[in-house]
Structure formats: structure tokens, C-alpha cells
Image (cartoon, rainbow, N blue to C red; front, side, top):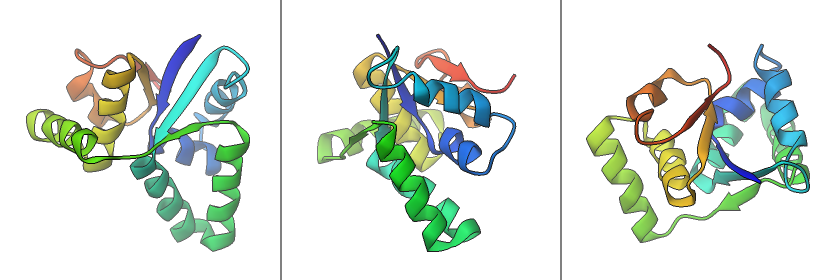
Length: 134
């Protein structure tokens, strides 16, 4: 069973019904009882929530969070050692702050990050990336 770490980009594309949405949906439907174990850091969850709330309001954000839970995505809480792992990635590779948490979780789990965010090109050699767009 493949381990996949979702970043905010992937989920926001789903909730905005952007071109990557069908692929994200297929990945989510292959989750916990299927072919994937899906993970999301609580930092990236917050990023999804505020992005959707700004565009669709509180009701839209609540619906998005409910869908994430319904797909069985495992939410990874942050502690001090993990925050420092993410900080090191940010400092070394100049990732976005929230992106550094997704990359750190992928490293920790031996997982791939699912994204279309080109900022992850910076760490593609040290973290596997499952690109949603070419």
C-alpha cells in the first residue's frame, strides 16, 4: 500500500474543481481501505481551510474539512521535533512554510507528496513527488 502525503495545493484544486480535481478525487477514493494510505499535516489542513473559507465562506470550508475526514485522510499533528525538521527543509531548500511540513512528513514516512505546486521542484531529488499536472 503506497503512502501519500497531500499538500494544500492538491486538496484546494479538488474543492475548486480545477483541472487536477479528477485525479485528486481518484487518489482520495483509493484511500484508506484501497491502494493508498493518505496523510496531511495539521498545518496543511489549516492552509486548505483558510483558502477555501476566503473563497467559499465558512460553510464551504466546513464542507471541505468534512470531505477530508470522510475520505479517511490521516491528520498528522505537529510537535517540536517535527516543526524543526520542517524548518530545516525550509531553510535549506527555500520551500514555502506549509510546504516544508508536507515535505518533512513525506521524508519521515517514506512517502510521496501529491501536488501540482512547482515549489516542490526544489526538493524533488530528496522527496518523491507525485505530480498532478505536467
